[in-house]
Structure formats: C-alpha cells, structure tokens
Length: 126
Image: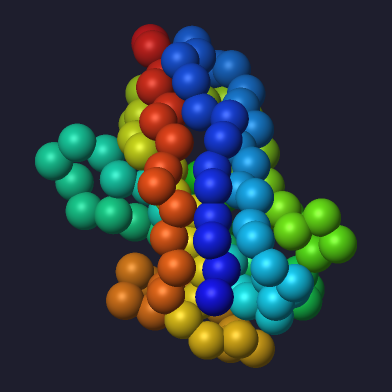
C-alpha cells in the first residue's frame, strides 16, 4: 500500500508559480505510476499530469501544457508538480494519486487510481 501526503498549496496571484509536493510512504513507491488531479468547486475531478513508474513517460492536460511539470524522485519517495504562470482557472484542490497496481503504465482516470492523498488547496487570485 501507499500513503500519500500533499503539501505546497496556498494563495497566489495570477502569473505566479507554485510547487506542489507529494510525500509517499513505502519502498514500493517506485513501482507505482502517479498522477496529479484537481477538482474545482462544482466541477468534476480531472487529471492534470501523470507520470509512469519509471519516470520516462508523462501526460499533461491541454489546459496546463507548457506551464506545469510533473516529476518524481523514487529514491526520495516524492512526486512533484511545478506550476508556472498560474491563472484563476487553476484554482482547485490538488490531489496526488497512485495507480491501483504496481508496474502499470500511465493512468489518467480517477477510476484507475487506487490511492489518494487528502489534497492541498491552490487559490489563484486575479
């Protein structure tokens, strides 16, 4: 099993940058593909970025391409989301998630994730 704890959220202004981190428990972290999801008020949860267990493959939603970067440090059991040029549409609770199984390729759907953090709130003021 994997336990996930997000950090780094906060209130920023449009155009600012923010770095989200997700600390994972367990040596098996390196075998799980990971993703960042977000959920804005009144909207469905969406995947904004994902990375496979090896770190070789990544996915970005069109809305964040060129602004967000996902990375992982398997030795440090950490998943990171670097966010630049934030705008009000990025306001949401951001969740770190791990796939239900180990050695699974990229997953970008909520139903494919088996482990979730509690989320961290990002608020972008315009």
